[in-house]
Length: 41
Image (cartoon, rainbow, N blue to C red):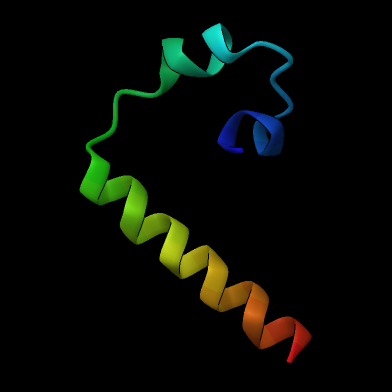
């Protein structure tokens, strides 16, 4: 999903740059989801 949002066509491209901890990714995903929810609700 992150790769698609960044415009990457291959998973390997995203993996090359994705050196984030799972907790950081989870927190970011939650913030993005909350922001989207505010915009559509």
